[in-house]
Length: 151
Image 1 (tube, rainbow, N blue to C red):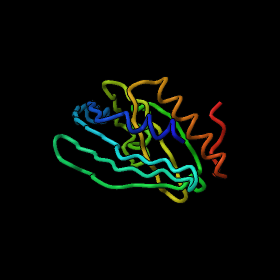
Image 2 (image 1 turned 90 degrees about the horizontal axis):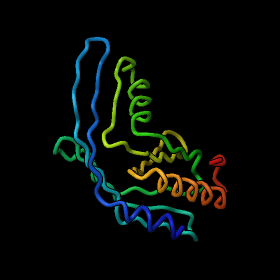
Image 3 (image 1 turned 90 degrees about the vertical axis):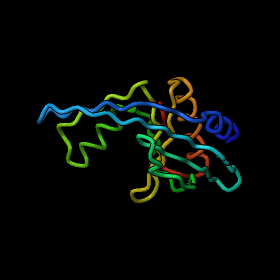
Image 4 (image 1 turned 180 degrees about the vertical axis):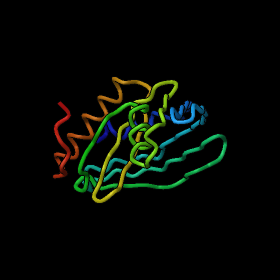
């Protein structure tokens, strides 16, 4: 838990651009994103992770909130690319002709809780993303959550 705590707090503010293309009408558009998760507290005794996060899109704050989850409630821990996560989310929302490309590439750690709860952590370094994902998966297992083996 100390590793998770340290690595998530070290991430700092992250900036990326998502380029979109819609093959249905051949349109393109771009969004600039800034994400920061801070004040991360990984509490081993309580099996919880709490943090504050901020998301800015094109200079407009779209989220500035506290979040927390209990590792006992985690159903899945998935590491994916920013491209794949965005394309999967867009497709699920009915935008099957959209294609997103995240620059620079991100590695997105998605923690799914009970119901439709999802918690996101983003990385530019794939090795670090893999290490945090493995550590988080192990913590979930130790706390009695349902996350599958990362290997």
